[in-house]
Length: 340
Picture 1: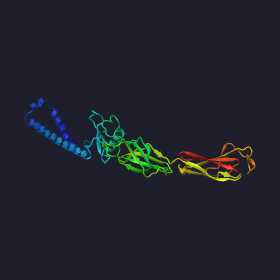
Picture 2: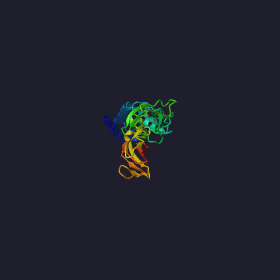
Picture 3: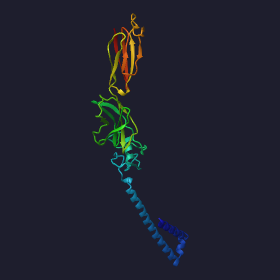
Picture 4: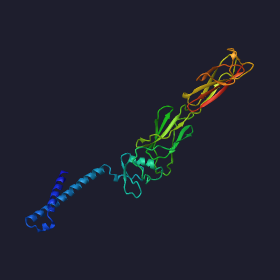
């Protein structure tokens, strides 16, 4: 660079000297002065040639370095194919709009995110769908259309197709944390039988025997960067169902033990609510145990939040009711006891 600077300085001085003499004046110069000007012209030609050679060498070196750092002109076109490179920094070019000669140079990761956001059709190229859009994307779109179903006793769910390197399935059981379950690698995008929806079946879960809610979500994975959120689906245990067991007849003044037997639901969230209904009898509405009138003709809470209740009643009969509630719903059963 210093040498180029010196050469340029010499040229400028030479041109200044030459410019002080018009062509007409130079034609009148003869003898030693004319030879001096001719020598100066020759030196100037040599200097110009040397600058040209140095410049060519300098820019050639820069081009070589640029080419070695992945010249975008050598990269594949993002318009035509979803990137197959395993290197997220591999360079792709993108012709943004039709009739627009300019190109945008993207990394493979940016190209993949552009496909995920703007190309929802499996059997087509990106083409010019990103025309006028912001193509330097930093986030992976969320999966859409997540829908739950059931295959046999297993959870089975589907979601809409999205271009990505793989789908990441996550699962949460009860109040636990979200955990990675499995990666699903999309099949060949150009295959004519590629499905329009994606699916997964969790054969490790039997929906008939679960006792906690099971949650699922699906994330798009583009070069190990995932969607931030998206839809969640939940599979519930079989509905809670309660039945009351205990004596159906008691002697006056005697109490009995009654138990709420529950199946289904989420046991860790069970709660119990007992109620008692005493039937009225105008001839005998006195509680023989305490010698007082018995409240009758309406439901009243009794007992506590327990699956077991100890209760007694007066003639002619009373009825017990138990409602069991879990995180997803409730169930009620009643039981009648005759007093003799």
